[in-house]
Amino acid sequence: MSIPRLLVVDDDPEMRSMMTQLLQQNSFIALPASSEREIRAHLSNGRIDLILLDVMLGDENGIDICARLRREQDVPIILVSALSADHQRMAGYEVGADDYIAKPFNPQLMLARVRAVMQRARRSSSLAYRRRTRTFRFDGWVFDGKRDDLHSPEGYLVALSQRETALLKVLLANPHIPLTRDEIVTALDVTGDSDKSEAQGRAIDMLVGRLRSKIETNPKDPQMLRTERGVGYIFAADISVEE
Amino acid sequence: MSIPRLLVVDDDPEMRSMMTQLLQQNSFIALPASSEREIRAHLSNGRIDLILLDVMLGDENGIDICARLRREQDVPIILVSALSADHQRMAGYEVGADDYIAKPFNPQLMLARVRAVMQRARRSSSLAYRRRTRTFRFDGWVFDGKRDDLHSPEGYLVALSQRETALLKVLLANPHIPLTRDEIVTALDVTGDSDKSEAQGRAIDMLVGRLRSKIETNPKDPQMLRTERGVGYIFAADISVEE
DNA sequence: TGCCAACGTAACACGCTGTAACAGAAGTGG
DNA sequence: CCACTTCTGTTACAGCGTGTTACGTTGGCA
Image (tube, rainbow over all chains, first blue to last red):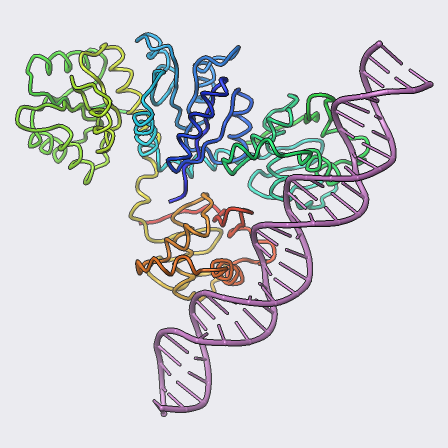
């Protein structure tokens, strides 16, 4: 069947690359992330079969993230943590985690537990997909997440490329939050090739520019796809979401 | 949701009653058993939502039992054992166990893990029936998996070649999951002629193109047989399955 | 004001995909 | 056996999507 796509969430770059490498050597696609925002960007952009979520993420907390995600999504989550006391494990299970792995872990055992959870979850993938396809409205525009185009306020149908569609989803999924180029690249990176993320150059700027030319009335003075100088981009219009 | 019914399999009577009491105090129905024969008797008699299976059962072996059950059933199984070395745990996951709990265990943590596995199973079970399905409906089309043709929304009968039928089945069987060309070739290659898989060139693209020209309203702008650039193809319509 | 980094975008290059045209292969009926 | 049809893979070419480069513009700051 198709290759499982995992999200590896850890704020320690070394740990993250160790885990992604391990997974990639074992025929998984491993996508790195380090914050709730990046997780949400990935979830809104493409299929994710399982999340390996570190509990201690700098100022964020894996337990809380897990609790919030569970309220909205069915995606399998395995918590990973150096905190291995029973009450800490239980807190993890309490918020809906599928498993709780203590660090340091045996790599092969970790793989076995990942496979076990995925096997149990296998058949829910198409449900998860449908849940992701929401309809967004902003400023007269209508964007059906299932399609690669959107309806203009005047009734025209504007065709988007797949990458433009993905970009729009990422920005819409994080309303009023400025996203850095790195976050966007990470979220759009469907290859699982974590090296590629660095050699992206100005691709995101081009992508934003092309999307602007399609949906901004005056692309020179963008109202929706705003630039946050020194940071990245932000979707600044009022958004309403359905379903 | 009715009260979960668990099977507690252990040959030590003391351990068994400790576990069943614990479970019953926490709103489960706990049924004791001590051999593969008793497990099978319970499974054929009534609903079992989860099996807690001890690894060392006198002359029987929980690992082997789990392996055999897995081949026939999808019932969630948690292995319980005093053998807690990594290779012993991995052996458990290898035969399809959903979790592996070392003895002695914290009762509350054990309950949490039981709940986690059951939740995952419940979330996923809704689509289990798709395994044996036959007739697919999507977007007004009806495809009877037994025939080499399909009914259009307008009532026409569109003839498909063998290979087109096979392609459609592969895509329908993996709803909303992008399949690479290699995966499709592999899936279509029923002959086991592994040499053929390599010399496929652009055959899949042609196959997809021809199927598109038969079932897409506007083959230039496909809505169902979508391309995932750099990856492969995906069937993007909502699918319902019968029988 | 001048400087510099960040940003916008035109122009280009390259790879991926759609598809027409062709060529075998496999069946069909005589 | 042949002529014919149908199915399927290959090739070639055109078009499109996307990343890179280069250069002009903008905005912040001293």
